Image 1 (cartoon, rainbow, N blue to C red):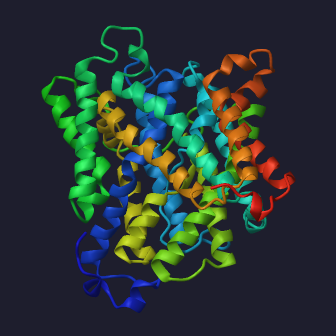
Image 2 (image 1 turned 135 degrees about the vertical axis):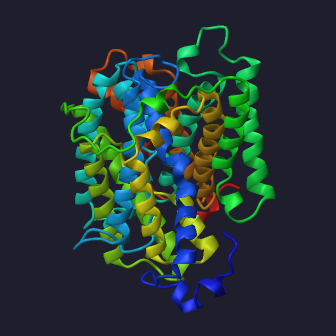
Image 3 (image 1 turned 90 degrees about the horizontal axis):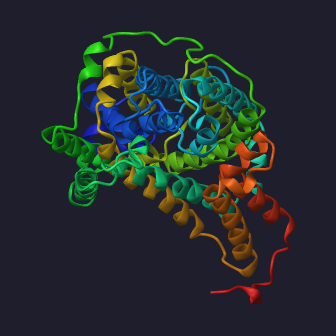
Amino acid sequence: MSTSNSAIGTPEQLRDPNYTPPMSLAVPLGIQHVLAMFVSNVTPAIIVAGAAGFGFGSNSPDFFNLIYMIQMSILFAGIATLFQTIGAGPVGARLPIVQGTSFAFISIMIPLVAGKGVDAMAVLMCGVIAGGLFHACLAPFVGKIRFALPPLVTGLVVTMIGLALVKVGIQYAAGGVPAIGKPEFGSLQNWSVALVVIVTTLGFKFFAKGIMSVAAVLLGLVVGYIVAYFMGMVSFGNVSKAAVFSLPNPFHFGFEFSLAAVIGFCLMSIISAIETVGDISGITKGGAGREATDDEIKGATFADGLGTAVSGIFGALPNTSFSQNVGLIAMTGVMSRTVVTIGAIFLIVCGLVPKVGAMISTIPIEVLGGGVIVMFGMVASAGISMLSGVNWNRRNMVIFAVSLSIGLGLQLVPEALQHLPQTAKVLLTSGLLPAAFIAIVLNLILPEELAAEQTN
């Protein structure tokens, strides 16, 4: 949105979370937040369903569950956002924090559901609920554990998330997991559609301004979708079958206890909580020019965890604050939580309409592949950017090297753990948890080097 800040409010008003701009401007600003996060929000559900075996290209009779997961991702992103912007008691930061489905947990979720079909989702929901409740319990302590997660550790974790997901993007662009081993996998048609999305996304990102630049990935997918349609790659069969309105279904996938799921989600919740603290700090610094208060950090962490736990009850995936919207607040200079509340209401309305999810499910996987290649690459580059602030002495280089080698190695060669118990295999083959654990422990126990030993 290109409207000048003076038309929205005074500088003091723009820095005030409780200020409400004129509705004629607040509504498009709220929708702009939705456009910035919409694709990233529904992508984890698509990836998890694909890994389980009932996603794109699977021809599974359970495919309708993917549509349900997309619907719930949209709905509970909106609800979790309201937890943050409106709040209740100790829950919520009362800041313009946009919540959405977290990419960080994907490396934990895939080993839990890989090839096991829709039945594995009951185990996954156990982890989501347990992880969310544990996340909420971290609220009073999150500020005290930040010392254990410096940029060296958090940067490594975010980089690992991006590197783990890049493989998924390439598979999607080539035709999806069900097409592996078939002649059409990696065909020129598949790659040409994916490349259209990538090139279009880059074009909008760097040569457009305002909302066109902010929603570059979404616009890239739209252009790729149009190209795929004219190439006969789009089917609307599921849209006509989908309901116009539907309420969420509690325990849609059931609930099955799994120690691996509980441990994995709880450990990842610690890292997710620290990410949320960073996003809150980014919002208050970028939008209001101040540090976040202790109450805001606690409230945001409570809301993060509660949003995730509630999402799991209804079949959605873990929620977290979305960093791209933090950047959008800094860009627009509008700190109003009313603006983000309007965006949340828009998400909730869309989430109650299954035809929206069905329409998203018509996107060819090759089109989505082009978009996620860009998104996952950006996740990895964000991690590298966080690492740029690290003092790269020998100590920190060794910590990074050992953590990355073991974490990425276990991810690439899961067979190396075939003799371990199932719970250990699930936790370790994620790659992310062992890398984070090793980095945290080494960072706490290894002595700091002298300045003279620093390397260039």
